[in-house]
Length: 320
Image (cartoon, rainbow, N blue to C red; front, side, top):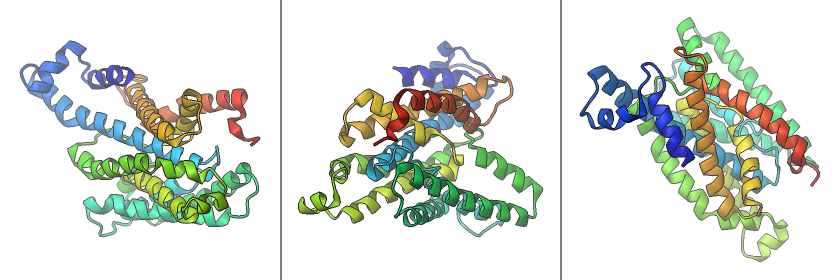
């Protein structure tokens, strides 16, 4: 119900503002002028779909990383996945690398997976979730430095401005071409994670116990990390590294589910991620109306206080 209400608000807000009662006729092409139909059907509907896809992908990827790695601080941002994907996209956008538009998610996936594997290798000896998170922050900072180096090599100031909006996380001016770019990856990645959720439950046990149950724990963990990188990479390719959604969503989902069962947690985190990003995108269009702000700024403004509240109430499981 919340998603449906936010979807109506999302299609109604922006320039021009529309009454919710106008939407059915505009969507069917039976009422409204051509400008209204163009704005709603060619800009707002694909943006709505991308907000749902990106939010679901980020929420699920955060739940996967936190659950499989048994680290409540794991997230695409802190594990270098977002920074790795952003670095790959920086090379494409700023250095004019000869990469087809349809291959952008694959390049972002490779960058995100590379960043995540570097963090995992560096944090293998970490004794606590906080130590692993600090190592992730250090690697992400190194990747951000590489991004700044790529920016310094850019020859076009216009490309730098476009990339700046990209790095903040932005869903504005997205079209059906962007939807076609991301939907195959999301449609494959989300059901795959749901189908493998039982294996994620087994990974909560000690590796020896998992092996006795016939599971190769390290290989299964790598499969889940690859799935998370796929979801994050496809999102970064079209919307940029939208922050906080992947870190906050799993904690909200655990407060609702209250059971360490990935078969329930993963779908709930997927829905909450979509809800959080869609709500943030509505705010991005109305806070400074008629001007818009990047959705990544709204997720930060919403999620940072919520993280502090959760930390105060639950300690985010850091004492485990």
